Picture 1 (cartoon, rainbow, N blue to C red):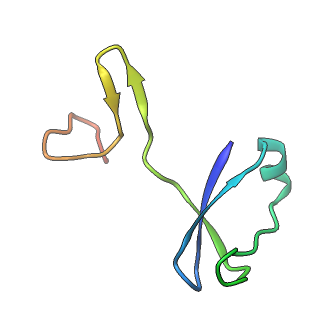
Picture 2 (cartoon, rainbow, N blue to C red):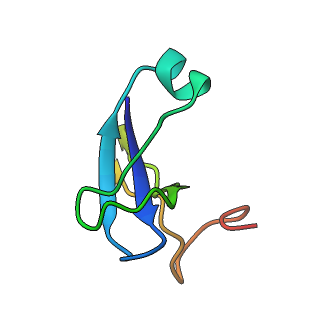
Picture 3 (cartoon, rainbow, N blue to C red):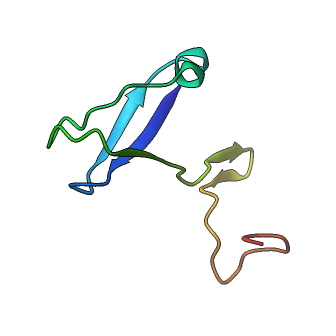
Length: 69
């Protein structure tokens, strides 16, 4: 799996490849840009592919019922 983190010191995004087991045990992360250990996981939009196309999980003005709460 690929997990996304943001550095709280330099605000840069970092992608980390790890298994679910590795993630559950705890990842020791250091920002490759500024060497900070203040990394927070970011949850990005969901991409759903179907026969009718790709939906990037964003809520816009034409979003259907139940979208974004």
